[in-house]
Amino acid sequence: MRKKIIAGNWKMNKTVEEAVELAKAIKLELADCNGVDVVLCPPFTAIKAVSDVISETLINVGSQNMGSEDEGAYTGEISHAMLKELFVRYVILGHSERREYYKENDFWINKKVKKALEKNLRPIVCVGEKLEDRESGNTESVVEQQVRGSLADIPASAYTELVIAYEPVWAIGTGKTATSEQAQEVHAFIRGLIKDMVGAEAADAVRIQYGGSMKPGNASELLAQPDIDGGLIGGAALDAVSFAGIVNAGI
Ligand code: PEP
Image 1 (cartoon, rainbow, N blue to C red):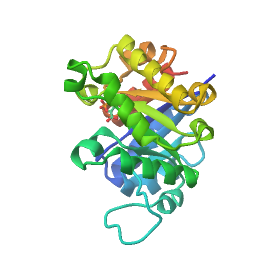
Image 2 (image 1 turned 90 degrees about the vertical axis):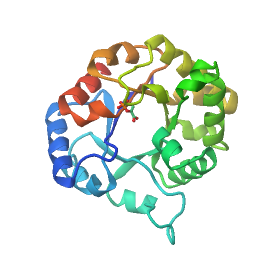
Image 3 (image 1 turned 30 degrees about the vertical axis):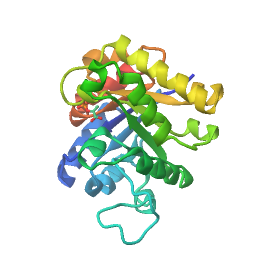
């Protein structure tokens, strides 16, 4: 039985002071979040402060990206060691905004996934099709290319650690959610791909989150689908009550 995982991606929102306020409010709402893994991913500048707020809870801290190298002349990047020092457990990699605006591709995402796993960080690897892909019937081929590329050469044993986030780009921040049937269909497809790549045991173990305008009102139905193991939440993660509502829907 896969444990559900709900992660909040705060994106480029919240100063340190605002982040502390939000983390405290989430902590109050989720004093007892035993049945679900909860991850907060603030901007880099607020990771330390958020880690401090949730230090004695079951809530985890994640980061929104991570560099693929250990250290050195990589202006603007952040390393695994810098994140681990702040008690980061999860790293979001290959988010569609990074793929689209910063031209991250599967080759680099794959390097980051390997580095994160080598350093005992848990990657949340994002994949998802654009509206034109869906409308032209190419959802599966686009998702397959991203899954095979970003997870190339990852051993079966790593699939208990890594998380895949299926996020249809057309549903992110748009208020348009994939129906639970549409989401389930792609999640089952991804699980089938993992089975083909590394075997049935890994496919059964890997957690696949849905992301794209998930809210308390639609979370229960999405999370009830057999292959949807959690959510990666953007907008609704910036409000403690909404975020907690989604977490509680997963219990
Ligand atoms: C996201 O950016 O990962 C996301 C799912 O955003 P939203 O929930 O706002 O659609």
